[in-house]
Length: 176
Image 1 (spheres, one colour):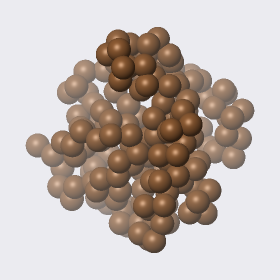
Image 2 (spheres, one colour):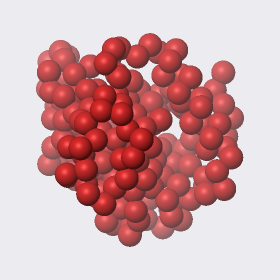
Image 3 (tube, helix red, strand yellow):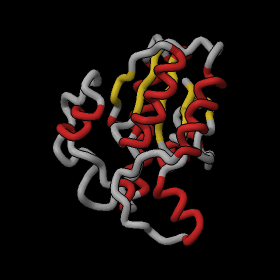
Image 4 (tube, helix red, strand yellow):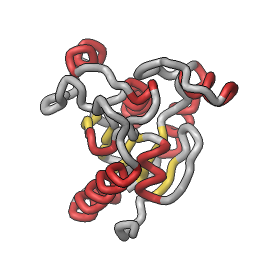
């Protein structure tokens, strides 16, 4: 299973320069982020990816949409791979707004505030990542699946800090 960090968002640009929370909730990709998503799609081409999962944030859905268009795949929304709720960018969009933008995607089961209203602890994020890894281990399509996710989730799942649009392999074993 391959984990792909979303492309650069508007929040990433300001935070990267000033190191302060920008107050931008559920930001979209920048032009650079869309280019990064195209590059990630090109890297995934020819790797046998047949299934694409994505976190329900706009930046991951945009990244996944670019990958899906390139690879001819459908997108499955997977809330377990969402970002740790800690900054303004981690305030998601309600399912009805997401449905308007991506009417072909299934947002069934997403609560109105699916991202959580409080800061998620690092321990809670680790438990969520461990649960996803356990489920992935049982998935027969594991080796043919790519997952568009976030820095914090990928760090919790793999122990690796990744840049925008980086691709890493999910480890076989559950991290301790």
